[in-house]
Length: 552
Image (cartoon, rainbow, N blue to C red; front, side, top):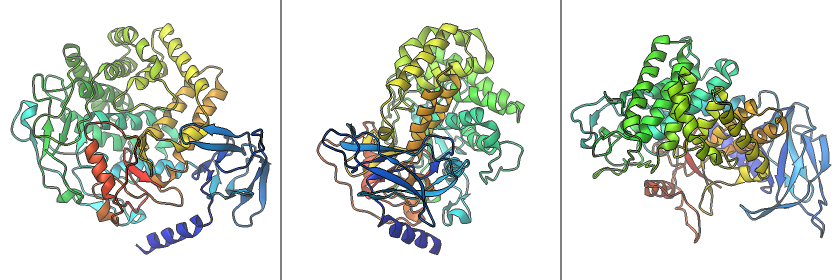
């Protein structure tokens, strides 16, 4: 662990000379892309006009690569900051640089290069392997110490599932801060991987994630997605319905996965029909995408996924809104959702895109309009709102109804035009406690994915597309998210991650929640608060998608 100590010491030394007022994409920028930083403490005259300039200097010899004036000052209502943009998009040179703002200070270093996001992609995608359940995991010398033994192999039916006896407990991914597996939120995670493959197949296929399956003729992104799809398939009942989750009856402590000896229970609604609509619809959508993605590599598996998806859809027609709440005796994450219509719209869109069949098109065109307002620039899809996935998929799949396609395109264009400045995405989260930011990593990466999906569908809207991609890229490498992926100079702490203490973490002081501080409201919130308050550190920068980390 000596190299970790060296990196932390180097980071602290560099950080001592860094101006926190300069908000930069620390991961970096593409040579031909837009390049912005935001300056909080820059000075303006009495009329609010910019009165300063900035320099972009080369790391190594401090020579000036670019110079320009700061943009007009603006008030950011979400943070209360007065900010000015520093636009250095005209700098096309490859290399490593930093911003120098006279009177303010220097920024963290950043790169400009064609492959600047390759490492970020690798870390984000490989993080799923670190979350695997039911197997031993070892991330190797690159993340020395991140390993655990075979875990959670004992499974059974909970009475809430209507069944009894043993049930397989294999595969799937551990959840954000616990070792449970949940269909609804791992469903959107799996779909994100599958969509990434569909949108970026060739460049993605060239990247090895160093998985046990690497080299088997299937792209690693699909290899990883299959690990969770296989678990999801085990959660489907014979009638097509899908149980909500497989967890223990209560959360274990902050222990290693193999030390958690609680039985992994298949948990249902506790009353007829025992399976739930949101989980079943998410399942139908994911397996429909999988049927497309795996067809060139494993046709038998693709056919199995499509058959499972069709079966789930049939179950949904008779059970359209069976919602989930934790049954008596169960206190793990609820992930309850009062409405499953958006998940069903997504299932219809993905089945239509895979099969082209009129039944799914008819359902979609009858229900899509009410969800057009859900395409919002500042709020990417979440497990509780899947309608944007449905809308995008319909257009990407060239849905049959031209009016529906145009309605969705107009909603996308309108969303981008109403979008605020780039600082909002870089510095604000919906999970804020006054001392740090709770960030859903996967949501920010989905933001970039969907910005690209937008770009593929907007005719004549290149500037709007570029703006959306720029804002999403700012989120991924921003002042906050840079910590999480480990693709920059600082590391996360207070990770809501059960095994983090065993990976070199140390307790931190409990969080003080200020009056009026905003927190996410959900049934499992007490778990998140307790975990955040315990303040365990993840010394490595590889915290998987879906992790929530409190950053300062």
